[in-house]
Length: 120
Image (cartoon, rainbow, N blue to C red; front, side):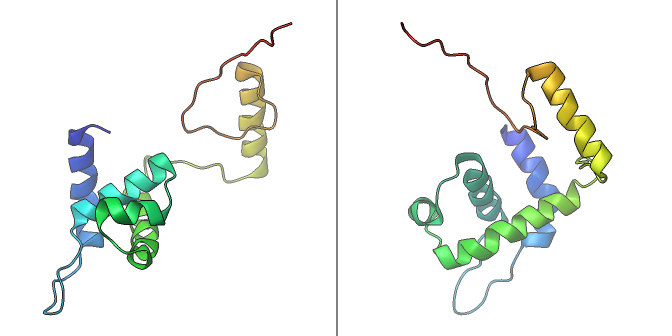
């Protein structure tokens, strides 16, 4: 993700994910909340490994990640369209089969299809 895209995303969801500072502790910044969530989604790292990178407890992460995901979905709901009927899902699956030769596939985020040939 480019820094510009990160800043754009942060700008639109920061009001929803910001927390107030308290006397007992500092709040986790919206920047850290978004960065943590994007790292978790992009890498699939566990909360355990990410807690050392971000210095945020697993317990806090388990609240932050779903909260930020919900804020992203809410903010970008006009840009994200999911099929709503069974026929739409079937149409998408058929299109994947036609174009990519992937039967029973209903979507893809990112990837690369590599054909491997076995040595004989």
